[in-house]
Amino acid sequence: MQKIRILHVNYIPSSKYGKAKKIQFQADAVREQNLPIEFLVLNDENSKVAKNIAYQKLELPKNKFLKNLAQKLFRYHYLYQALKLKNDDYDVFILRYPLTIGIGVSRFFKTFGKKLYTEHHTIESGELKTYFQSSHISRLIMMYENSKRKKLMPLCLGVIGVTKEIALHAHSFNPRGSKFMLSNGIFLPEIKSIISPISEDSQSLNILFIASNFANWHGLDRLLAGLNRYQGEVNIYLELAGNIFSGQLKESIKKCNDLNKGIQITAHGIVLGEALDSLYEKADIGISSLAIHRNGMVEACVLKTREYCARGLPFVYAYDDPDLSGNENYALKIPADESPVDIDNIIEFIDRVRNSVDTRITMRNDAAERMSWGAKFKSLYNQISDDCTKSRESINS
Image (cartoon, one colour):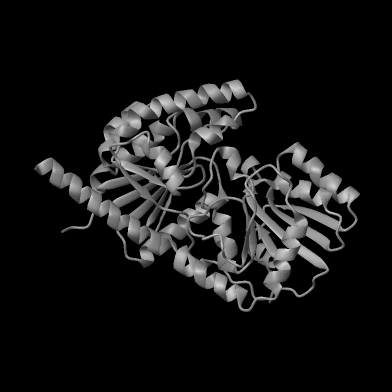
């Protein structure tokens, strides 16, 4: 039987390094597995074809306000035009779900729904609750989104969620469709292992917290609140790699630096390449997401967690992860609530890790076995192939 061809469609109208890197890793892993899956990225920077990824530049207004408006209002117009040209070349489209807001959304789903799976990375209604400063606007947008997708998502073949929780939520809008899970993964050859051994200096703690843009669900405020309460003797060095736009977070960082002699916080902004490798080398522990619950979620598969694991950096997290049991000796799971992070608990944890043997090797091996993009896409491809075969047999019977 001829293999089905899949196009994975991503609408990324503004530059987002983290998402672009993730798609590149996915494409590399799929190519390594020799799977007939290609990727399309609608973006605002360039048009080029690189192996199994096609980048298509969106023609957007140059004015910043008009550009932002066009990105949101005309997203389904851009998607429709792009897929119309590729409709005969692929059996299945996987669309990274961009909400149902925009002109032409009904036409898009009616045209392509019969060969489309929507891919969901969050419980959208949870994020929309806090997306706008006005709770009234957020509630109206959320109501519109839920109403619209109840009508349009049932036109699709099924849903793909990055966790079971997200997949179940998305499936509630398309209950007759199929339901699959594709948790976030990594492409191990592109992620360097930390070379230096875990520090034996118990009088200092070097913490690394990475995010493209620090958002509410990262929970940086929980960590800062814990640092403000900390009265121990261990010197704490916190390196923040990512954009911080919140004035409140900036003020909390300044306050923490001013009032606590044994604490030093450095906000670097976006850090890449060798500079990022250097931060990893001197870090004792990484911080993953600490406030996923603010998006109304219990489960998540945060990319940064996977990178910490692949690098061999012990980490702290506050959610259920489909690729972690919760009993790993290199990962500290803390409560998913609004309490300040217990810094003494982190110090006790890293002291235990210092006494463990081959922690970095164990983490690298676990990342390869549990978190590889290649294995995850191979499983998804086989499931979608079976699903398409059953659909065809059902139509023909």
